[in-house]
Length: 151
Image (cartoon, rainbow, N blue to C red; front, top):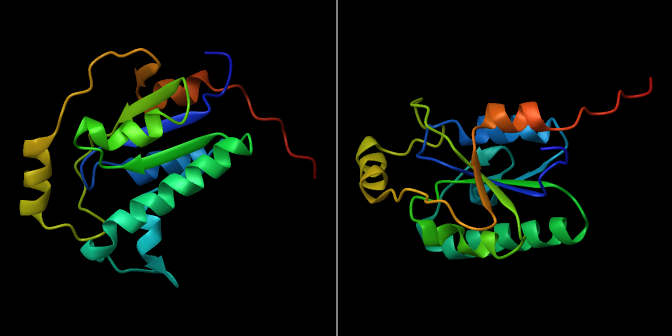
């Protein structure tokens, strides 16, 4: 890979390392979005299930705007079911998908039984046109070097 992929989706269960990977990509020039950001106010996370649809729309709108501005974007979300990625897959013709598989405690306090429910409904990603499955390390190694900052 010689160019920076414009859109990267990171999928995985709570505690799998999605946000950590997205932060690594943000350090390489990506704009990082995730639905969880909608629920963060003044440094505190307050999830409200009744606002989940609104949160997804908020995230999708920001990704659309960033892509339109020519920015590379990384989106981290559980995406346990493949249709949950459809809105993002339709935003750009070539998308890199990373599957996070770590097993750390959820930073948002998702109860283990809810994580088990998500694990049960997990759908495997099959090869598809316009979708490249990579690991975060593979993507980081393939990115062009960032220019040195001028002091």
